[in-house]
Length: 476
Image (cartoon, rainbow, N blue to C red; front, side, top):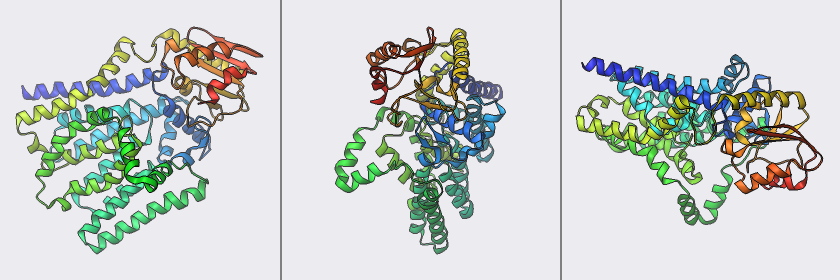
């Protein structure tokens, strides 16, 4: 009976794994995703597939590697080519990485309990939230975090350093984890470990702060505001930044991990500063502090911390003993389940009932989107510029196409050749207020302009736009 119960749970977990992929594919084709980052990274991948190794992103008005250092993106380029230049390609690529992460945990865990590990991964709020906001190299880093935690458990210095070093290729801020790792080895007073971790940290810092700007030119300074604020009035600045953190989302991400991590730490026989947990915290600490100051713990950011902590207790020799107590096991599994149900509710509604609070999901809208794409292809060339609301962007991206979006990260042009607006009642439209959006729908059709496409879903206008239309976007 126990075998049959576990088999049913395992099949259920496989079904949920497929649900994640199906739901995201449906979301892509119906403009249901928070698609600023999806559009940005997809624009990068499309142009990289076309041979540009550091493409200029009009969505961000910056070259991709001048914005963030994420060379791991090159691994996702084949997914775009294999799917015929479709945004579904990198979404599937991200899902495959998640599958490999689960498989790796099952294979490397001392307790080969596939069903239990499957459940913990599939109901980990921080991981699910990242998968609900494709695509991000942060999410892909879970494989390197898995390798790092595994080699920490094994005490293999060479592969600890290599795994930690590989993290800088997913996001430049991970280089500060190398400094944390150096701190850990300094506490050990082991000259060999100190020397090699020092060399690794220096190499990482050199790549990020010297080699990267030398190769790509001036980079966007995300940390400048924090450094200036801390130097000017460190306590007040930190306090004010911490007030901006969304603590409800923060708790949902981390609460399920508290008890299993605590129980795993209790079973480590070494002094605290020699434990695997302390080593991991030394690496995560500086990265976590930067994310906390930026208020970036939820969405695709939380996975950076959730994945390694999940790996820590699953790969621990004490993993099986943690779940021996029935009440403890039920409590842990329940906290994982309860904090994740809202995400699955959203996916079930999208996949099974074609319902979403953010968008309309139907065949008429998809048909309209396909007609819209044909109109854009017919009327736009590489020299034209298009301003577009966010969510439709991944479906209209093409190599060298100049698309701009309403975002404070975008440096807007004095004018555009085309303006594309999704109808607000058919989907969530970001950045503009409802009043501003209604004004735009009216004013962008006034003057020397030509309406190329106008139905219940979209408005596409070409021509010289009156200032009353454009100022709504240029002020963003």
